[in-house]
Structures are given as structure tokens and as C-alpha cells.
Image (cartoon, rainbow, N blue to C red; front, side, top):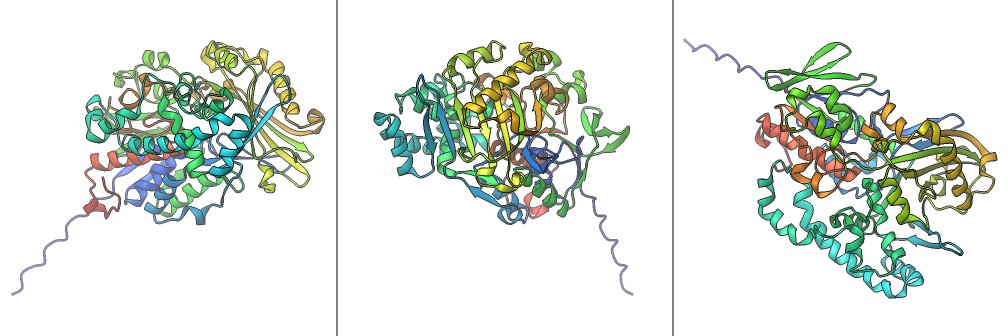
Amino acid sequence: MNAPLAAPALLRPPAHVAIIGAGPGGLAAAMLLAARGLKVSVHEKDAVVGGRTRTMEAPGGYRFDLGPTFFLYPRIIREIFAQCGADLDREVEMRRLDPQYRLIFETDGAPQVLDATPDAAAMHAAIARIAPGDAAGFARFMAENRAKLAAFRPILENAILSPSDLFALPMLKALPHLRPHLSVEADLRRYFHDPRIRLAFSFQAKYLGMSPFRCPSLFTILSFLEYEHGVFHVAGGLGGVSRAMARVAERLGARIHLGCPVERVSFSGGRADGVVAGGRHIAADAVVMNADFAHAMPRLVPEARRRRWPDARIKAARYSCSTFMLYLGIEGECPGLAHHNVLMSREYTANLAQIERGEIPDTPSLYLHHPGATDPGMAPPGHSALYALAPVPNLLGGTDWQRDLPAFRETVLDRLEGLGIPDLRRRIRYERVVTPRDWQDEFAVGHGATFNLAHDFGQMLHRRPGNRFQDCEGLYLVGGGTHPGSGLPVIYEGARITSKLLLRDLGITEAAQGLTVAF
């Protein structure tokens, strides 16, 4: 008589992860976790994916990126796509720009122009035309920052949850490159004597919403990355990357719920056990918060569960500046403009001081995006889509934007005309303004601080909210408000860090899931 067959082992259903927000960090986490067999649901309050990394369709056929307008250091997102069985370059068309951007330095006479190029010899020559004595410093800057980035990759690619994490061997090896006593601007004095050239390699601190006179010297790697790895335009707008990420995540089984704001994170004991959205509880084994930290944390997680980050600490934290945005659809083309244009005010340093005091700058520096220089599809034929950005104080400065908006708009339009856009006001066919108040009220950005928590040493590494939120189990963070920080490449890397921590905590190993990425 044959022995009875053994009952088949019960298969455990895949763990469910609920992700709050379909910004770049949330989408990257959704891709990575779904690729490892988890059940993933993404809950996004808006009707589109991407958060601030979206492309807006405006009446008249104009297209504008809402926030970021270019792609820097695509290595990380390419690797994420590859880890998920996809090819970034098949999903989106990216074009490396040369020149990367045009810098216009205001002077008492005619403006001086520097077209920043990834061609090392041409960049050496461009620097020499403005400051002959500084040209030799370019090669040394590149070599030393190449070594700096290599040394700091272990810090940027791993969780830093406590001070003890700083004593790992790779961290200790990186410390000689840190120079904590120097700002970006001060560190650049080791290479460049002319303040205009230092400005050309330090204005990138604005990508973090910080002054180069206060931003830690670590972040000279931002301008290095541009010259080493390129500045890319995504055909049709940077939102195409967000849409591609959503497509890949959904192909892997993730469910993305648009128009579905989360009301709160739910808890069982000391552990997050899901979210409440639309009055309905959605159970989950873990929750990933991609919403803006300063805005969302006090609203979604009770203060009693935030011992290290109570309301008082969140309010007292230091935040980046904000941005005044002007999206213009204009009749006619702008042949004299580059794709990316940066106007450096004569009063650059004074403007930074005004912003730090909570004042709107008198003669602001401006960034102008003119994608029509390389991508005519961003506007209808014979028209141009222009995106102007001016750094301004966040809402903690107390600016009354209802009162001050009309005058500042006129200031920005005057300065745009000075860049070589004649008769601008008459040619406007579409206009949208976004102030710090709009960033907070419409786009859920805490204090309107467009670049999240400031990146000073008191709010970096273990002093930043952790990828695993330390105050309660089962809650994880991604986005610019957590480690490693702001900027698309860094946010994507943060999503990898968060996903690895979450998988470890759920006991999902390489062997169990067939992972190809080493922990």
C-alpha cells in the first residue's frame, strides 16, 4: 500500500507594501520592490505621476516641466531600470547637451558669457577667455572631485541610521575628502581665483536650495558630475522618465492609484500596518512615505509616535530656499537663447543675503529653460515655451506673496527681456505663476521649501530623517527629505537604500527572491 502523499506546503502570499506618493522616489521604490515579487500599491493624491518631476500640458500646445528640467548622472536610474529587467534608453529618449548651459555674468558693461561644455579642451579654452590664470585649475578640479566622488559613494549608497554607521571603514576613508570647515565657494578657491569662475562651479548649490557660501564643500561634486557624466534633455519633457518608471512598475505588478490622497498611516501597536485613503483602511506589511517630509509627517503620523521628530523639531529644522516660477508660452521663437541659461546678477552675493533674511531679492539671478533650442516639440510651430526660475525665501521668511507678486513678476519679466527676449509682454499667449505659497498649498511642499530640508552638516547623514523611520517599525522614507538628500540621482539612490532596508526587515533574502543586487 502506497503511503499517502504529503500535503503541499502552504505558500505565503507576498508581502504588501503601500507607498505614499508617486514622485521619483516612490516610483523607484515601487519598481524595485515589485521586481522582487512584493505586492506594491502606490497612492498618489494627484491625477498624474511624477510629483514635481512631471511635464505639464498647457492650453495652446505648450509643454513645461514643473520642477526639474534636466537629467544629471543617469547611471543610477539606468541601473534601477536594468535591475527591473528594463532599458531606460528604450523607454525614453535622452539627449546629451553641448553646451550644457550658458552662463551670463552681469557686469558694469556688457555681460560676459561662458558656454559650459563637457568637452574638456573647449572648457579649458572658455575659462581662459575670461580668466586666463584659472584655466589650469579645471583639470585639477576634475581629478580631485573624481577621487572625492569615488570616496563618498559608500556614504551616498548606504543607510546612515546612527552615528556608529560613520565608523565603517569606507566612511573613515572618505573623511579626509570632507573638509567640513569649508563651504563650496571656499573649497573652489583652491582651484580658481576669479569669482566668476568660482560662481560657474558653485551655482549648482542652488540645486539643493542653498548658498554656495554655506553649502558644505562635499557638494562641489555636483558641478563635477555635469562635466564628467553630462547634462541630458529628455525629449518631450522630464516627466517622460516618471511615466516610464510607472509603466515598468505596473508591468511588474505594482498598482498605482491616482487621485487617491492618503489621510493617515495606520498602526497596530508600535508598527505601521497600512494607510487610510478615502476613508478606507488598506492593510500593508510596510509603508513607504514619499510625500514631502515637513508637510506630510505631521499630518500622517501622530506626534506621539515621532519621538525624534516631534512637531517642534520639524518646525525648527532648517529648510532650503524656495523658487518663484514663471511658465510662459510666447508667440515667436528665441534664437539667441541656449537650452539652459543662467543669469548671474551683479548683486549675486547681496541677493543670497536677502534670501537668507527672508527678503525677496531686488535684482534676482535667474534660470531660464528654453527647450526649443533642441526640442521643438515643447511648443507649437512658431512659438516658444519658456520656464523662468528665481530663488526666493521660503514661507518661514514671512513674505506676503499676494501683496508682492505683481511687482516681482514685473522684475522677472524685465530681466528676461534683458536676456534677449524683446517685446516679451506683448507676445505672451499663456502664463502660469507658482510662488512659495503655491508650492505649499497646491503641491504639498512644507513651508514652500522647494528643495526640502537644508543640506548643512547638522541635517545630513544620521541627523537627517532615516530611510527606515527610527521612531516606529514598518515605516520607511524616500525623497529629498531623507538620506542621502535632494536631487534626482540622489533620490533614486535613496530609493535603493530604502528598498534594501525594507527587504531585509521583511526577511526577504537574495536566495528567497532571486535578487541580483547584493545587499
